[in-house]
Length: 331
Image (tube, rainbow, N blue to C red; front, side, top):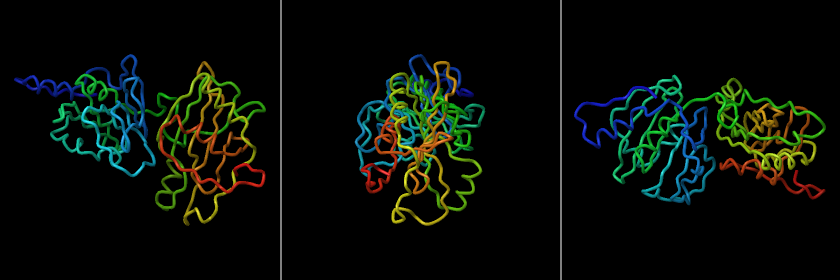
């Protein structure tokens, strides 16, 4: 992760903090038993047993990695003084706590995946070892607080940028294309894995943002990979989706303005060798264009299917149910 700054005559605490700031291994490395979690084109290695998004309202004391929480409940839960946490994302979404404000001092200039970055570390008054890596050109930041100097350093070392993340998802929506599904079924019948790639689409009414969106697409917000029986169960459920797109939401639920419809979720099906079997888009947070799309055919999103697709991602999302159709099903 770049240079190490260790001065002469450092005491025990000073040396520990210098080692925290310095690189403890190969940049972007993943220790045995750890996994990568990420958002917005960046990801970080965390211990395999850590949960996802157990933070904010109602948080527990368990260790967690926080990325793309999405819609949150409006309440306040104080962060336990012994909670271990790694927060990754855009600066405005991550740097909002008192603990971050305590990370003061001159950062070390370094690089993350070849991109200029700043790294800083400090031991907090509550005893935890904290660190931060910023990538100014991407407006991205990683903030870490753990009970172990070594664990904090390893997490900081595991920060990297990616075009395709560890879950098999492209980190830009413009590189995700629906299609490739063969046969009569709507989705591949027995995939070995399904990558759930959440781009947090929807409707965007600001003309300037719309123009940028058409040119660059959306960054990956969150991802997860289902394997084995879980992947096959989702494929089975999706194969039973009713044909045809969903009805548009009532105008009373929609804002006026320019509205390009952007898919919320790309589901990438793969075989045991990792070969792509097909990609299906799910669009559900917009007023128009709500549907499942396999590149050739459309099918309906339902609340049940939405739960199966989105629950593994551990993010907040929106869904506006329409009045029941005459058949008793949901449009």
